[in-house]
Picture 1 (cartoon, rainbow, N blue to C red):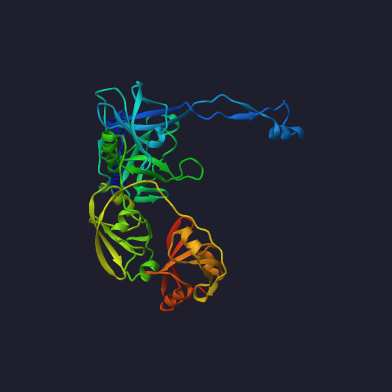
Picture 2 (picture 1 turned 60 degrees about the vertical axis):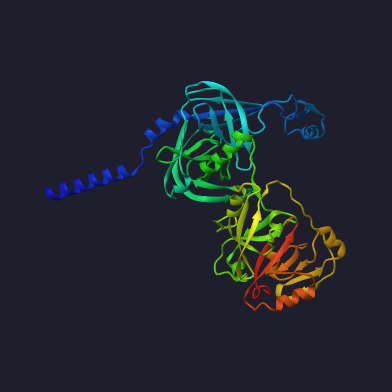
Length: 462
């Protein structure tokens, strides 16, 4: 009996020892890197003046309170400076500091406070809103600095740690794991975010994300929240992306990016089937800007980009990052999927800008397309000229349940598969050639957006 108890105690001790070894110890990491993390406060002096109505001393329940609240002339208030708090980290001993663009953008003054309580006025070297990266400089030397790591070598499930100033609490430490890599977020086309479950809150923005080697692998930038506070989803900008931006900010104060002039969308399984692909991958071209780099290279609507400059495009979100990181005027080879075959074209990369164009108006009597559950009409010459299209059909009504879920009144069908639509008769002829139960890819223009919709024809009459 005693022997069995001894064996159980030994096993228990071994299990406790094993568990203790599996849990990470962050103390050394924090002691080594904490001093390189700074608190950043910025101030805007030109905040627009606000006003408030002239209210007599009435209780809120008084019938006249609502009258005065709505109609009393306003009293101007003096403009008050707006202040924001964030974090940052030192990347060089001579005072260069990395943070988020939204922490210092449009600031009239930036103050950096170190862990030893020293404060410095900082100069903004450059801001890049597209990646949310900013570089500031303080006049100091011999500062502690971080070591850069490789975010590409990280694995999902790996431990990571953040240091920052949530709600102004300097040098707060939180830890968690890498939840996912290469996340694409809405309106954030140029950053493959690192997703973690590290607790990030207002004030953490711009702070470093460390791996267990004590190397910075990212800049904490965003959280996903329905409450305004941490809910288990936080996102960091990979440090290699940030440092690529920093290099340009240090040399020129701005960032230049490549551009080819296309609109793209994800290749779904149904779209892949309709274009004769064995797997859903690549970036589907839904529109090509006239005169752009893509247009000059002969890239067409319905092409699917599989590789750009030797880099594989698995998801549509990969392409903007790859193109943006390509130097303007570079000549690159693009591999395409076109009408069932692979094709390569050479392309001279243009320079990124924010110019967008497009509008859509319509309205004319149309004919029913039974296989799609739609009522469509041909565009008039005036409408074609206004929309700058050669053809297309106007969606006037979606009759079936499935069609109503997919189409909006005023949509314009520009193409069916690889075929541009010139008339209703031609559209029906092309539609007849698609077997029942197969997916059909329709290129649709909705307002300023152009995109493909994949439909299974045996479902459209439901």
